[in-house]
Amino acid sequence: MPDNAYKLIPADFDPVPSLKTLADSSVTAVTTLSTELGAIGIGVSVSGEVPSALGLAREALEAQGFEAKVGQTLIVPQRSGTTLIAVGVGDVGGVAGSLTAANMRDIGAAFARAAHRSSRIGLDVVGATTLDSEDSGRLLTEGVLLARYRFNELKPSSKHVPLTALEILVPADEVERVSAGVRTGCVTARATCLARDLANTPPGYLTATDFGNIAEKLGPQHGLSVHVFDKEQIIAERLGGLLAVNAGSVEEPRMIQVRYTPDDATGHLALVGKGIMYDSGGISLKPSDPMHLLMKMDMAGAAAAFAAMTALKELGCTTRVTAFLMCTDNMPSGSASKLGDVFTVRNGMTVEIQNTDAEGRLVMSDALVLAAEEKPDAIVDIATLTGAALAALGTHTAPVLGNNQELVDQTKASSAATDESIWQLPLEHRYRKQLDTEVADISNLGGKFAGATTAALFLNEFVDGVPWAHLDIAGTMQVDADDLWRSQGATGFGARLLTDLALNFVPPATTKS
Image (tube, rainbow, N blue to C red; front, side):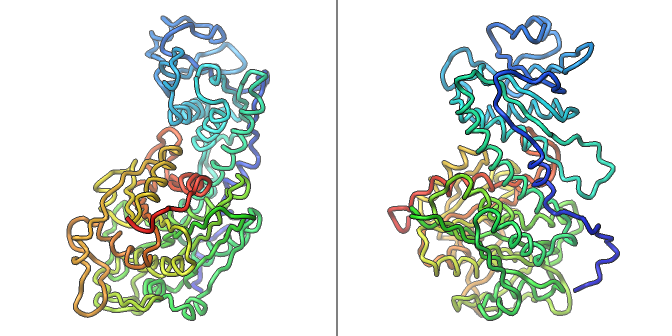
């Protein structure tokens, strides 16, 4: 192991600080808000009466530019005591379904950001909406907790105020249902924040070995069995792709296998996560630009998959889920894989490396073979795989591709439920020939165009016909600035989507589209 003393890593450094922060936060449904709250958010629709608690008429609100649009907020100054915040809920007006689930989550997030100076806050918006009360509890909880997230473990100068209490005001007959939603929202928010923590942690503080240690520590706490494969075991398992990417690094690779096995499982879903702890590009060195700086997040797929696994038991998931997390960094050195090198995947296929910066698909090839060997009902992989995904769909939407439309449709349904936006791209097999090479079965580079598709076509070679869907989260892994429930830095994209998919998974009736 290298001498990391120059980093002066604190002995008490916690790579997943949000778990303690969330554990210290209390979220409750109440019939009367406490008097000691620092801020209270009050829902205001674009029409109808303005709640008298605000003490302002609509004309006064509009004079300040407040139109009650969804997620709009206005701080109403008080002489003393609790700060009041007008929170726009849009045009509810008694029209059923006019407020979407995504709107509700955004309302919670917008309020949480407006109340960022207060540790104890209350929210009175449930009565202003037409959504199911349990859904409202979940969505508001997710919005508030995700918006108040910060990774400050290495920033002692931060003035961020941690959230210690959120009270959601509800009618007495709705407390039980809203509370049930709150419990679910706390679990899904915790999973997302775990994924964010892992992706935000600097690469020198979170190696593949560290990730394995964290999985072994947290897994059993959430009903998971964890098996971490070290380098010698990886060699024994013939995981040539993982070893090829790791060849230039002084840090050992890890393959982390995580299993959730409920009684009387209703199906078996396999997850595969790309865990490149830091991606320099290898010999095909990346330029030193802002994207290179973000390559500590090239393990965001593995982080999301593992985080989703931690939510399953508490949410009563009946699907058996097995995850394979492929972890290593990708570094240039005298021992690094070279352009033109050929390695052998676990299933015996040979791969020519035409670009060492197309490394994610190399480590995932082995994992997909391992997953397919288990004969699951379906495989879903998640990876920060291509710049082409970012170029095509930007930073808010991830492409999904797959060999089975039933599975892709289930993934899209989970995307809609969680507001983790995806868009289906075609698995266009006419591009497959771009992966041909004279010296091996396949190359890891597919040409200048359709990069997201050719990367998916490469992965498709290793699923052995099992229904499979691929999420390319290169564009959605992070945001440069706070954006409603997306906090600056790693977004944790995929953690809630995969959780929802596992909870609602139905084995596809067809084997291949």
